[in-house]
Length: 204
Image 1 (cartoon, rainbow, N blue to C red):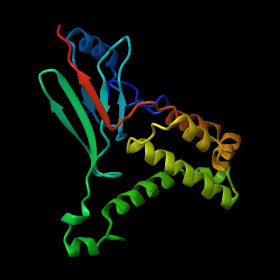
Image 2: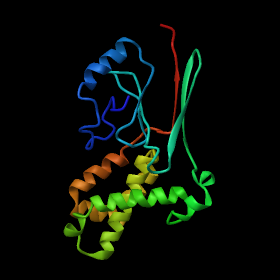
Image 3: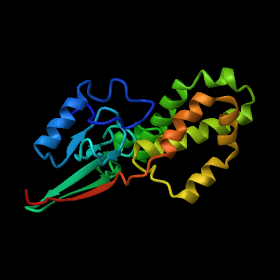
């Protein structure tokens, strides 16, 4: 389905999660739905469910953004497995098509668009932080965490989280942009591998 079964981000979920998600989760439990596949939020993220609903929701990133992610699902009589992959467009482009890109690497082109979109949406930040060096540190840091979340690479280890939180940019955000810190903390809280999932079916 298009909209999500769960909130894939604790802060940004309005308009993404189904309005009647609670009702649907009850039906998923009632009919033992093995998995749900969704999109809309454009972020690669897997939520396994909880005691309310055991059905996992696999949200797949948008193919025309980020690194052109897609998933392959294998189903057998006793198991479902999902694995995300990243497509490389460049070998399929003609020389003429490549010449129309700012650079030949198509994924780099998409990453630049992603960063440009992020930075356009953060124009307000320049009013809150006026030091150019601090602006760059903060925006580069936000870009990194956003990119990782949208391509499903936010499952940081404890050491990686500590290292990210020790960065100057994170400290500046903590001091000057508390609402942005709250959002980034949701990205740092991801604790699920969002590239693969294996489900064993049980006899009912």
